[in-house]
Length: 106
Image 1 (tube, rainbow, N blue to C red):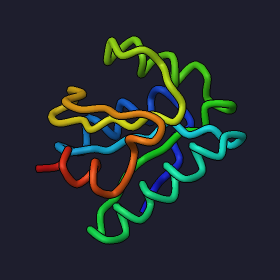
Image 2 (cartoon, rainbow, N blue to C red):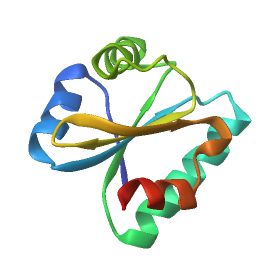
Image 3 (cartoon, helix red, strand yellow):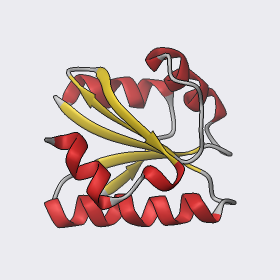
Image 4 (cartoon, rainbow, N blue to C red):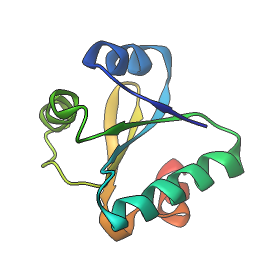
């Protein structure tokens, strides 16, 4: 299940509480992002795992914070895989799909 993030503090707490975390930056106005969001949720559902997302139009500060923290240029849609609070993988646009997410987890 995907849980919506709404603050930097919440994001940091998620990283603190979880060894492995997927986070998706989602745009509600982009059809590519809609597909990525569907793929993200399908991936989580198939594995019965939790993930997190933010809506970039609502959470610009958080989106910018993640870009700064990971040193990865902002894209939307964009997904990160964090292990021990560090981003070890990311993908954007059409590269976000069940297969790529599964490979990141390996």
